Length: 608
Image (cartoon, rainbow, N blue to C red; front, side, top):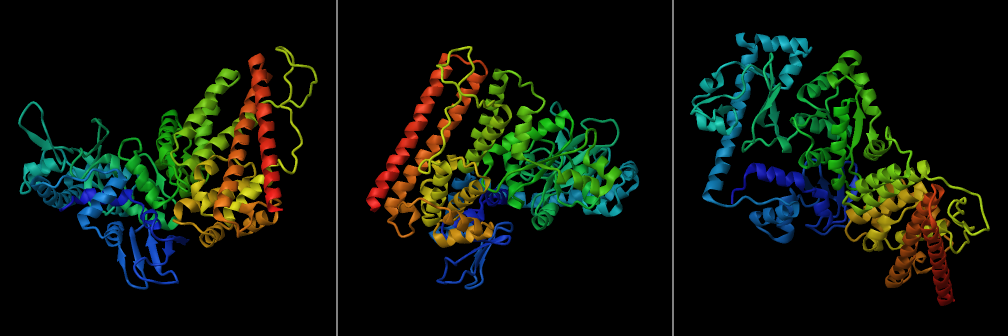
């Protein structure tokens, strides 16, 4: 079957090559690539490399080379159509039906690229002709240099139906199919879709012209007009200038999303060549996937006015379900009343770079959207803000990232809003009286969360294969110590990325993240001597003990959070129900502590 080129391009864009191959091969990060032992021949020293950005693998030992489709065909013994269907099912794409009509469309589509290239050349010629004087005047007003105009292939669509006449040998039907002509609904007439407009060719990631954007010259409407949907052009699946910005961004490690064509061109002329733009719509899931294939944290640069900030929040919310370890967004805010073109004109590239340097993480954007500038003086309003933050975190599909967002929001909220009273009372509490404290007791060595958390991490380093089995509760576990929390996240990330994670692969990952010394420090600090802290212990025993400790720690965290909320409600004037809830949680906390003490005693007796 001859699959349409656009479908195969979309399939390659959706499949993460390193993730696909990582299920069969233990891969380790090596600069911008991944490396491992070749699955096509026996070797002890890795010579097999995966280049995610360029979409291919290569073995320097046996010479095997190919794409995701090649890998699936060779590993699973599938034909090309079978491999396409297999990967399409994984990517959630519907495979085009194999019919004579579909084959004819695929054949015809190949010729559409040639027509679009002819149109782009013709528009460029018109820009330099007599009719292009107004367009050239506009370009001079915007201070675009001849080199910039050539680099972006700018052109001019004159009034009338001159493109239709110039490309008459192509035929009206093909020009309509390309979106270069329009048709009147009330009469049998076709006409040039773009007239009296400065033309911006829109290219796919392979650099082929697939559509156009046209900026009207004068008072006409709409100000910007894009190509309609065609077999080549889908504005929700393309980004302006990605073909040029992508290779540069892979080297620099940053990719900047601005609002429009002229913003991209203005910052490129100023020396910031990593700019792309959506095509007149809010960012789509497909466009986010394109961005993440280039860099792990694209920078979205929006205007500082209300509309710009609403657009930033929409993008943030759309990205949440798609977040993964190492994959996020940053947000740069322009000065009020200025777009990138204004900024680089007045302050040059340095002014724009300063805005980029101040870009904030996605989590900061969400936090400020719900907290800053909002009246949170009453418990009800604070509760609404907390619920909104909780909903944002729950929208994240990846359990590790979701758990970390939940913990971060909870910690920030508690630090800012929860009143903690240290006064103690020996009298029974009654409504109207000062609330009693949450009955804090000094932590004992057997119940110290920090001691058990440290031991838990030692267990994961001794038995890294258990990180995958215990992934959900581990992701849910909040660790107060920032360094230990980071260590846990790296271990979980390795469990996701590396199939059959073992101590050697984990050691390489820890070294890659410069965490080897922290890992040694954690091992030295361990005072718990259970099965999972002994490297040679039976795996089943280690799994059982590690799971028991993990469940207890997660339960403690939930009880502690609920206890803090109950105490806060009492501080704000709670009732007897709040008091009863606080006392119940205190009893539950004591029970969990006793459970851990009994379990520890049992393990000590078994060891003796």
